[in-house]
Length: 149
Image 1 (cartoon, rainbow, N blue to C red):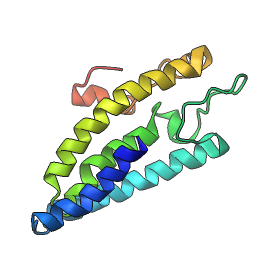
Image 2: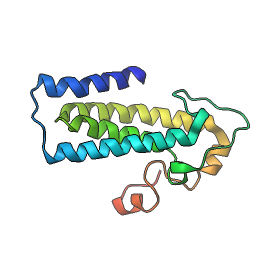
Image 3: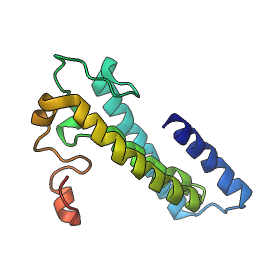
């Protein structure tokens, strides 16, 4: 995962430079705003987890699930931030290929990662988050027509 994320950041710089992409105007500004908002969401999630935040899947027996902060609304706010980042960060400077290729790769990684993480966190996590959607707050997934998690 770390190697994939590093390659993503390199591609964000290389594609616009190598392919001489012009700044995409309004799309670039909107993408910058969404990328910035994704970082705010990421730091909110990380600060809510506090010392529990890490990049590995670790189950601590007896630890209660964190259900405050952005976790009140969705199960995986940090992954939402990462998804938004993978789509919008490259688009700031017209990195359309980077956005597409790495978003698809990230989706595959998250598919495996989230299932492994939720399984490792066990029954108490499942119970605490039973009615909470993975990515979009309640109401949002209904209005978009997406199936529930």
